[in-house]
Picture (cartoon, rainbow, N blue to C red):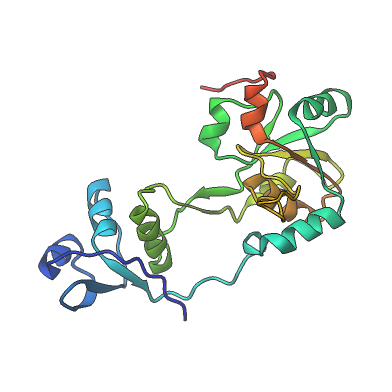
Length: 232
């Protein structure tokens, strides 16, 4: 059994119970500890008030660690072993035009629609949290504590969705916003993880044979004024 806590406070238990009648909890002199059985907000406002005012302990069992949650050191070792190459944006554009590489944009769909390389395909590796289990409520509250009201989770359909569009011999350049890097630096001896590197790891783990990574990400692509299209 695993518990996720978010250290938030309200002075009154009656206020919290008026927000969420189904909560169970105990109160000390400084805070109210809440165990969530089930809760779905009736409005965005009630969701935010709920998230800001409680310490949430989810009685749901935390799901087992997924491959995407593996330590970055382990991911990086496999990426290097599988010879996943990082390419700069101009080289990626050349490979797309001359060598039939496909740019796989793993950003959320909304970001993709705002602008992306021509002929890129979009499969988000992370998506907005969808469910309302106790575990998901706890995660929403934790995101809200840091001012993030659109928390994300790993997309469980990522590999399936990629497979519907690309076979395992497709030549793929994986891209996200920032890009990350496998190159060591003085401050980051293991490089830096990113959504695109996580996606590249998942692809090679699932048998994709020709996976590259966009160094500098789409931020650098747009900054270098390379071709881009937007969708309404």
